[in-house]
Length: 312
Image (tube, rainbow, N blue to C red):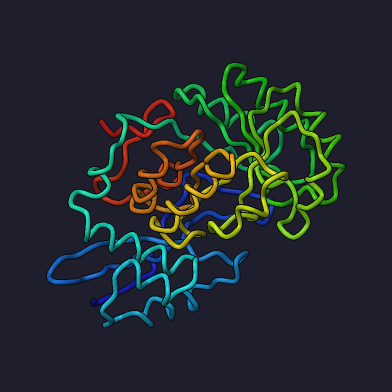
C-alpha cells in the first residue's frame, strides 16, 4: 500500500469563529492511497484540541506507508484521530465501488448551517442570509458571553428555523442549569458540549429541558458508557473516531445505550463531508456544512441547496 499526503488550504467565505478562536482559512491534509492499482482519497483536519499537529499527523500517515494494510489492521497501527480517518476513508473508497453511493443514501440530507461567534447583530445577519437561502436548521456557535442576547437575535430573524447551539466547552464559568433554563423559551433543539470534557460529570446533576449532545467528550465507542446520564446525543465526527469504520462502531454503541446520533465535521472539502454520509443518512441531526463554508471546494463537490445536501 503506497500512501502519500499533502497539506491543502481552503479559503473560507467569511471568518469562522468559535469559542477557541477565529480563522479565515481551513488547512487540511489530503491522503492518497494506492493499492493493487486502485486509488482512494481521504481528507482529515488535525486538531490541536486533541493534541494533534500537522507534523504529528503527517508522521502517523507516513508510518503506514508501504505496509500491507487493510481497515481492520489499520486500527491496530494508528490511534483514533485525523491520520487514521484519512487513510480509513481512502481505503473505503478503494474497497467499495462508487463509495459512498453504494450505501443506501436518501436523495437529500438536511444539514445545519453554522453561524459563528460575532456581535448579536452580525450573527443575526448571517442567520438571516441562511434563512433566505432556505436553511431549516441553524447551528449557533457561542462562548460564555451574551448567550441569551446572541441566541435571541438569531431567533428573531429565524422564527421558524430549528436552532441548535454549540458551546465548544465554553460554559464552564456559567451556571449551567440557569443558562439552559434562560434559553429554553427560545425553542433550542439541542446544546452541544456546554462544559469542558473533563468537567462534564456536573451534567449528571442537571435536569435540562434541552437535550445535550457530547462532542469533545465522545471520540469512540469506548466513551459511550461514560456519557449515559449526562447527554442524550453524541456527535460523531470521523476525525475523532479515526474514520468511517470506527464511526459505525460508535453509532452502534450509542444507539444501544439509548443515545441519539448527530454527525458533524471539521472544516474541510466535500472529500471529508462525503465520507461521513453513510452515517449521516440515518442520524437525527447532521452538521456537514464544512464544504459549504469554503469558497474553493474540490471539483465535483457536494451540492448544497435550501439547507440540504442534494444527492439525488
